Length: 212
Ligand code: B12
Image (tube, rainbow, N blue to C red; front, side, top):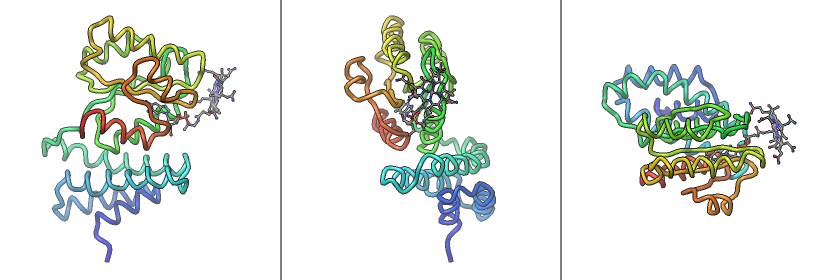
């Protein structure tokens, strides 16, 4: 018979949020510690989702519904994790840069990062450089994650990095960038710490940037 943690994992892979909610409750009632449910259930399943996406077995819709199921489980688990004093792997301020309203990819990245154990400060879309700077100043952020889908808004990634430098904050945070027109070469050119082509690799990159 499958263990409850296995059922949570397969519920996430199938995108079955109701099953995931039910099984997370069941695991808690069985006395499985919340950090174990997080690591062996939710994060392990999202790692597998990322692998399936990279291998071309899952596409964006499968990834979105898996992430939604993971979030449903995480919502039940969160208060217990606070009780157990589980610290997130790191804090990420994520946003689509100024002038750009595309947020599907950015939201997917946020969900995968959450699935990888990060706390997310989602700044939304059309985020001006000074708003990223404020988030770093006031929220103890470890990583700034910027998304751009328009070639015309990509320069705002560099403008944000410059604003972080001007505010004397550049050494305090890692900067990662992505979005369809963005490349590793562009990341190198603007002085970002990392680039990833998709949400699954964004999660792996973020963990590497904080040394997790
Ligand atoms: C959906 C869409 C829209 C929707 C956006 C809805 C929304 N809520 O996001 C609407 C209709 C609003 C829209 C508007 C416009 N759009 Co539009 N849009 C698209 C479309 C079809 C899909 C984008 C998308 O969601 N892809 C799916 C997601 C999952 O992929 P993704 O965003 O690339 O994200 C992945 C990776 O890039 C990466 N990633 C993303 N962000 C980050 C961040 C980090 C840190 C990391 C590590 C990784 C990462 O991970 C993600 C998941 O795997 C694209 C075409 C395309 N094929 O890209 C055009 C496209 C981006 N749009 C385009 C244009 C021109 C526009 C408009 C200017 C049109 C107009 N004349 O009004 C406006 C601009 C509005 C604005 N100011 O932003 C052009 C851009 C051309 C260019 N070279 O700049 C495109 C390429 C269409 C085209 N072929 O012409 N658009």
